[in-house]
Image (cartoon, rainbow, N blue to C red; front, side, top):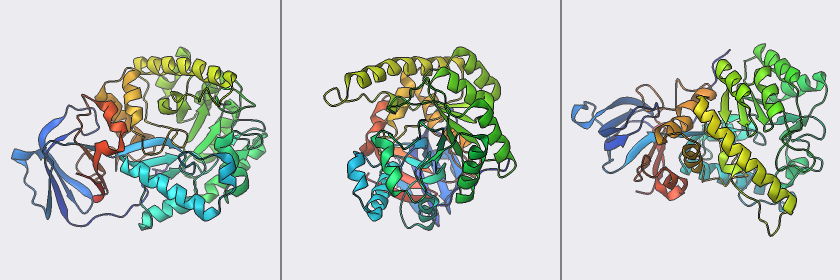
Length: 421
């Protein structure tokens, strides 16, 4: 498999030192108090107790009372879905309005402490290029571009719910691909690869929110997942990830060779064991799962359906943590609000992780899922200086990191992109 490309972002020049901070490096190691992190030309060159540090710097940042963590990785976002957007309003917007909405979502995501994000349908490579050129601020981007599902499935835009319907009219490269036969599946995969996809997203089940299918309905089959895995292996080896909520579709995705499972709310113990054996990653998106429909506007059947799946999904995430399945942070932001991405950390702790384990899920585990852990995801010498500083003690009050103002500074490749100290 070809190593994943590290998406480019503008890099700082010169040497910057963060002195006197507590370092949580993302590897799961215990915090290092009164430490110094030195960055040169956007790369970490020293991590040491302040008393032992040797590097000189052009600029010194006083980190006393602050905690430094790696930039976070949100492995499941939809940046084209603006906060508070509604389908009818979206259809009336010009393309430029939607582009600026997306840029705002990207800014909010970065300023929340997410320096790298995997957009799992809807975003086109032009945004990835714009970030690389410094034309807009935003997280590094890995893109699925579109998600594949069969006719009537989760990503079929006909009769889709409001979160998907605006794709029909306006997306130059649609965020969906309706596929039924093996030939259609292969053609869709080749199209998104040609467009520049970093990952292939498939829907092996329906969804909680879609009106014409359910999490227990099957979508892309196990055999078709395996077909896609073989097709990408002949190219750059892009991984496959699966929207999979019900038990049968989750098993189909895992057995077909998907690298990660998105949601996984109905997962069985047998499939958890299979994931452990294969090294499959679970991205549970608990932030979105725990968002309840408004009973004042949503039909009672929808409210009850969501509540039932909330119970199942929370229990499944706890079993996954107990089983030792590798998990990565993903919010489904767009459905969950952009800019509150780190709310997921508290949900992971609620599922049974320690705060250090949750931080690892949101940093090095996410980087490894994207194939980027040799460059980002932890505070180690030789890695890109993606750093998040906070006055909050994450080990005592990890839920506070959900508030954007709790993130005092964000550094991306050594360049300060947020500073409200």
